[in-house]
Amino acid sequence: MNKFNLFSLIGYIRIVLIDVLGGTSILKTLTRFKSEEQLPKDVLKQLSKSRLDQLFHIAKTTTTYYKDASNYVGLGVLEKATIRQYFHEFISSSFKQKMYPKSTGGSTGIPLNYLTTPASRSAMWAGILMSWQVAGYQFGDKVAFVAGTSIVKTNLKHKLFYFLFNIDVYSVYDLSDRKLKEYICKINESKVAIIYGYASALGHIANYILRHGPIEFPNLKGIVCTAEVLTENTRHLIQTAFFVPVYNQYGCNEAGVSAYECKYHHLHLISSRSYYEVDMDQHLLSTDLTNHGFIVMKYKTGDMIEFDDTAVCECKSNYPIIKHIMGRTCDIVTDYEGHSLHSCFFNILFRDDKSIKQFQIIFSDTTLKIYLNVNPDLALEAHYEKYITEIKKHLHFDSYKLIFNAPFLKFENAKHRYVIQED
Image 1 (cartoon, helix red, strand yellow):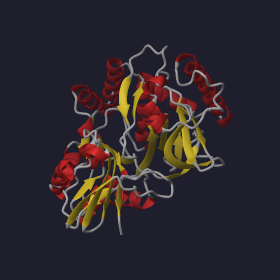
Image 2: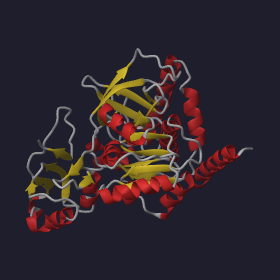
Image 3: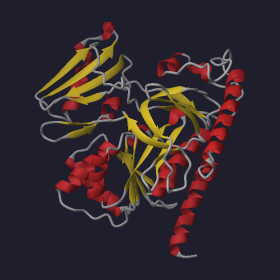
Image 4: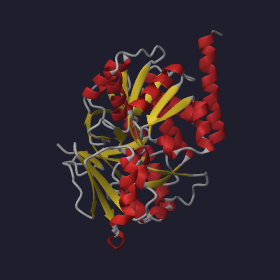
């Protein structure tokens, strides 16, 4: 066995160990997804519908929320607020495996808490691995994860998980030139093969590279963007700076949504993991077919999606092709001196303050405005000045304004954006 194959085998064994220790089946699920994508389209639809029927039966007979439902078609669209209000009613009484608390990143300003299962976690990571493999990933390759999770996931279990997966996590909360220089040096020194992260943050790093001259990444095979819309301008910017192919990956884990971009640049939705619909206004509704413990059906993801039902992909995958994703962007806040913070910084800043129900940051060249939806009895500016003090450590504006319980700025897709740049 040559050195390359031995390295890949060791990487494979490390993921086997993750499955054993975590009770997951990532590798088995990955194999299943790659097999199912070769099925004829009509067979794939039948498979998804059969799994939906099974899930509906479980939901009707073992959950409080769905006990009076007569059929799936008659179900109303499920909103985040409903899950928050009736959280325990979505839990199946027959599910005996361990479930894990999880929350969304708060791109609507209010994180959603839910429960995930070993099968659903396996499906999420299998979908991510499919996107990495398109970019050239081999088991055992070093991966740089450029995202917000370094702040959130710092316990021993997550550190062990990342170690076994050979993932280094780079925080997006500080995107100063000093930090970017440090990140780039570490990515090169650690021989990163795949970079996986927020599109806006990777675009920001690319801008730094282009400003400071060409930098070679001899071990880098490809880059996969996630969590936000990858525009063609951002893709071109990142490719120009890093000299490797850039691919898109889209997911909404609470809804079982996983999609990866193939080498022909079609974004394929893994339809054997979720049962999906698009309503009259192009809102994506989805049901996670792998989560039998915390069942949410016909969930409104908050994204607007357009599918291409006629395209046939040269990669031979028969998973449905997403033509266009509208929404789901996270902006970077930049002051007049060029200092930058990823928008997730504010989610972390406010998350432990129970008085803050929702927030929105609006900034211009000179002014940073912080809109806070709070209990009127607690809307005392003195209590919130500490946040201005913390923000001033990172961003410089001529003025900072706290605004309480004023209407938030909305966009055409009606999705709340929690960071907005004014002209």
